[in-house]
Image 1 (spheres, helix red, strand yellow):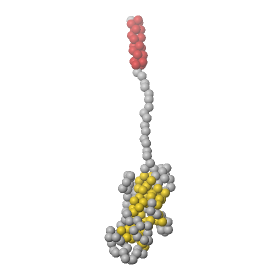
Image 2 (tube, rainbow, N blue to C red; image 1 turned 30 degrees about the vertical axis):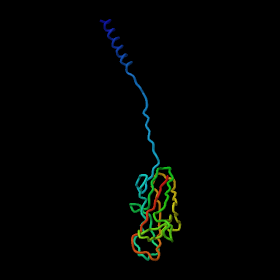
Image 3 (cartoon, helix red, strand yellow; image 1 turned 135 degrees about the vertical axis):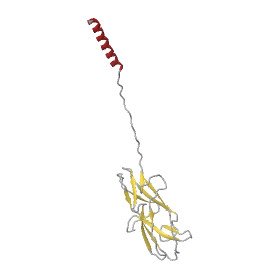
Image 4 (tube, rainbow, N blue to C red; image 1 turned 45 degrees about the horizontal axis):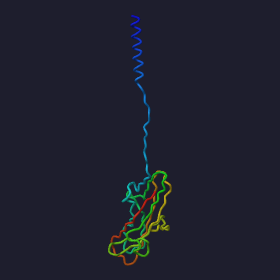
Length: 177
């Protein structure tokens, strides 16, 4: 029996060693990537075209008004808001309007659709002393990833002979970053 017991013990030990020899460990890695591109939001909206940069509303004036002042406001009623990726330098370029140069007294014009125009201009200060020319650019500080306010103001100038009506203009705007 001891001989048989020794053989069984050796056989069992051999099987245990054989099963350990068959178990193996393989190691490796998983490579994970994410590519972020620079991006901006205008007044909370994203996209590459058709964004709402705001509205310049001069309100209701009588046809004999002298000047009317307004500020470009975003959809929520506050000043224009630009949120860009950290490290970018956003620049807002105020391009041409639909009726630029149609009336003396301003570089831009609001039109009533019947050939009448109200001159107006954009300014970068509330005192309306810093004129923003057509294709003028407002360069913001380097973004830290926090929304930045862009204050843009307007002033319309009345003139003799303006009939009552609704006067409008559409101005193109670009944001680069």
